[in-house]
Structures are given as C-alpha cells and as structure tokens.
Image (cartoon, rainbow, N blue to C red):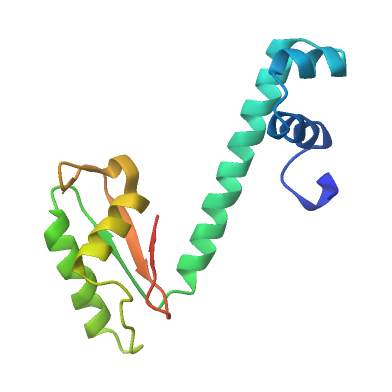
Length: 138
C-alpha cells in the first residue's frame, strides 16, 4: 500500500512493518542508517497518526448511528446500561440493543477504558447505538 493512500509516510510504514516483523528499534536504525532515537520518534508519530485515524473512523460510524447521547461524570454503570435500553426503546428508528444487561455492561467497560472507574463514569463521553444494535463510544 502506498503512503499516498494513508495518513502515514513511507518511512513510518517501513518502520512499522519492521517492528511488526519483530525487529528492535536498534536493528531498524542500523538497517536504515539512522539513530534509535529517530526510529523511536518515527514509530511514536506513526502510532499517533493511526490513533487519530481510528478516532476519525469511529466518529464517522457514530454519525450514521440513529441514537446517541452524552454520558456525564458520576453516572453509575448500572444506570448507564438502563439508559442505553431506554434511549433505544424511545428511538423512532426501531433500534434493538444486541446485548443482554451483563454483556452490555461488559461492552461499555471495554469501550470506555479508564473513563469508568469502580463502576462510575469519571470522564464524560458519548455513546451511540447503531442501526444493528451495536454500541460505539467516543
């Protein structure tokens, strides 16, 4: 794949390929005639670009979701699960959440990472419910 079709430069793609093949930063630096620090910087920037691209794709998916709402700090996980079902039921889009309560709580925890601590929201975020009943978090 050419870098022109990605958010990565040719050099970033080259470094990531070599890292994926198990090469150390030192070995890549020697192979490419540069320093380990330069390879580290290239890899760090590449991973940041990838994260930004993933966030952009997630946002685009959320735009197409018929239901989305903001979740605020202090909301309990059990209340949040209830909110998801309530918002889906109240939707004019005939959306059905594809998870039972336990699976939904688990999916939310998986997608929110550190934004939920001890079953309580500690950082605001948005939840979207897609047309096929999946959950997205931004």
